[in-house]
Amino acid sequence: MKWKKLGKIFNPTEHTLPNTCFEFAQSPQTLVFDTFVRIYFSTREKDKSGKYLSHVAFVDFDKTFQNILKIASNTVIPLGDLGCFDEHGIFPINIVRDQDKILAYTTGWNRKVSVSADASVGLAISQDNGLTFQKVGAGPVLTASLHEPFLVCDGFVAIFENVYHMWYIYGTEWTKSSNNEAPDRVYKIAHATSNDGINWNKEGRRIISDLLNAEECQALPTVIKHDNIYHMLFCYREAIGFRTIKGRGYKLGYAYSEDLINWTRDDTRLSIETTQGEWDSDMMCYPHIFACNDTIYLLYNGNEFGRFGFGLAVLEK
Image (tube, rainbow, N blue to C red):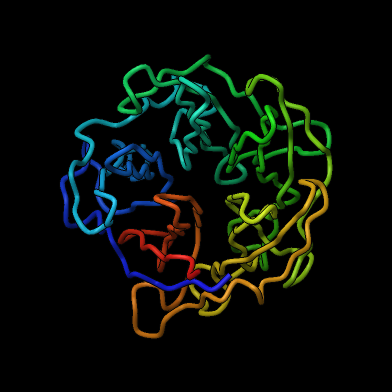
């Protein structure tokens, strides 16, 4: 898969965002219309205590991805009520067209005491063509279970042959390099299926092999079918030191499958690297692959986890 980078196309610091949000346009995800493409992303505001809250906004581009048509004036979906799984933020959100419906699978997170956060996957439906979404319920549709004890999140849903498929991540452990540091999470990619998009059956196993080590953190899978092969992009990093040590942050990974069950990882086929001196010189993360006008595109974040926006690449034919 040979990709040509088209550069950064959106910088949140150059625009007015909903509420009092500033910086961060994380995990860009698309909804393609006839004449434009809506790109949802997660941005941030600070609460009264100075801690971040994650909100979902969007930006509409024409299909050249060179002209911005509209930026959301309000957050797309409200955060959860007191004590709910999405009380402190929604990041990321995955948008799915399902016949005449537009679904949103949300990653809602809430703060914890001994560790930084926990997360689950929720569901919302839009009645106004994707401008806003209403939650199906106050709780999640996919969450922790006996062998996936925490951090069930990053759900990406696609419908193949009338079956809903969700690729998601789940936490396996919290780890730290010394007693003086806060614990960091380790998570892996898994798969679930559903007949209605609400009730899910977990496959119950990791589906992507490690490249770095057993504590490799794998995040935000995105899947597309192309030339009768299922292609997955995701990002991965070291568990410790990824925020401050160059080379330990997120990179993009790749796997492929012929049957949606067995996945072969081969990052060498991806052919996209960080660019020295550019906005993505230290990190590439939170990929989203999509088709538009018979062309396959890739959205992704760069340095500092998307603090200053997202960029676009195109798959060369």
